[in-house]
Image (cartoon, rainbow, N blue to C red; front, side, top):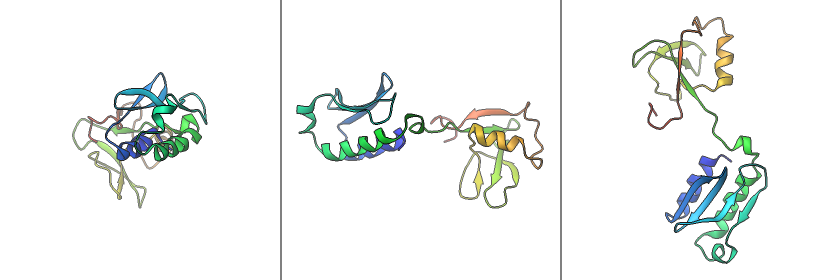
Length: 154
């Protein structure tokens, strides 16, 4: 389970839950009280209830525990979303690499991603694209833009 998935599920339980990454740990606060329960960011299976007497009476505590147990079972390096990048070929709103999901062919367009076109790529995917002969790009001249940043084209 990704941190983002856990956060989404917890927020759906109650608006009184707040989530933060505190000292590398995934910390859940209830009504402003931190470390009510948290998952270690350093190792697998590390789930801790900071205030057992409080935890047992907060709304949906059993569901919250199950969500965090699933998160804790996930290896720490798999909890973080893989960073994705746009490949900017030239300066323009339509100067980005697009790969057709059905044909695998390259085109240049905007950053909108849908079922037909892939526009966000992980580092591993970019390395694979560089090996393709049918993508005639000078990889030393293209620029990469963070695709996970919420303020940029997302």
